[in-house]
Image (cartoon, rainbow, N blue to C red; front, side):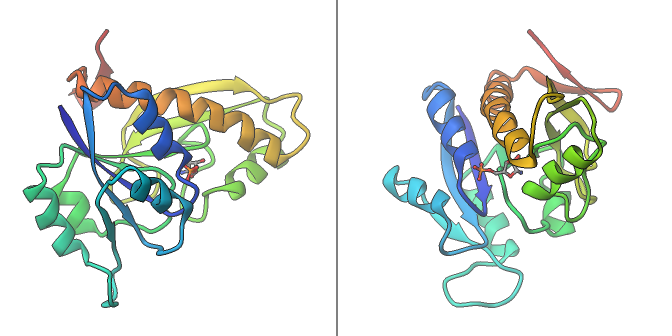
Length: 203
Ligand code: GRF
């Protein structure tokens, strides 16, 4: 059983797709973490009785800090941390401690269209304005630099007939909901390895 913690800042459709699509005997969503008190993803966590942690770098009532979160994750025996639409940068010490245990989903074909400020519709706007014929989604390990860690899995789609950034976003969301549960299940089956600094996915 893979214990996962999912970080969210918004709608939480990727959280839902992982929760619904990965077989229940393979993963346990042990925590949902957010930097916002009011995001839709938290409603999903509440309905499904998943413990919620609000996290902030600054001292705020009802929020924990990353030192607390680290200890909590050790106690909960978290195996994998998933950033699914989480908009804040994770502190370096936290990333160091959980090296190769934090993954992110990005709605473009990294290393293109990534980096600081490249989230949500901003990504799709840049993609649309650059007139590329293909885009895609990327699941990658998180390191200290935005959207820079080792790529685990990508899927490309044809976007040559799309009319707007919103249309690209919507098409890609379907792809995200396909590849993220696939990757999480591979982690649960222990089929994702790092060999010579490259990610290998076993059948
Ligand atoms: C997704 O497009 C994801 O790739 C990006 O943020 C969006 C989150 O959507 N990192 P949701 O909150 O999972 O619906």
